[in-house]
Length: 184
Image (cartoon, rainbow, N blue to C red; front, top):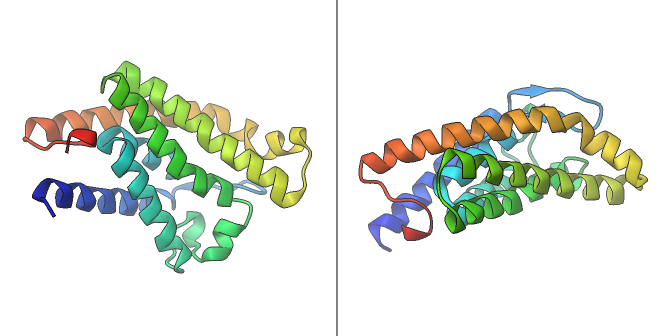
């Protein structure tokens, strides 16, 4: 294994840990809490790119599924992924991949990172709403009311923060000769 690949795997693991920490920053709501998880997803994808950003979220999901209390509210176990928040957790993987891919195909700038993180937010909310609809047998309006609308304003704020933090960290690490994303 090359040292650059090992470094990226370590960064992915660190971003999974950051996601676990930010998951504990939450505002409780009836079905799905507002948490810092999606902020971490955006930061991971913006720093690491598509493959390693998605890998960080896979690590995060599997750590939680093994029972480690990494999900929001210090929850852990496969039942969390099978429950109402499972669609969002699975959506983190797709969101990280697509956010990173958008940046790799355009450029790692604040403007492109904002667009990419807004796309990631939409992907996560889409996975979550579909999951809620199917799991709880909700109508589309009920699934949107429970799983999308309460998160839009905060989601936009987190997308802006993830873009700014992610690009700042990526640039700082780039100046220290670290390479990220598909080029690594």
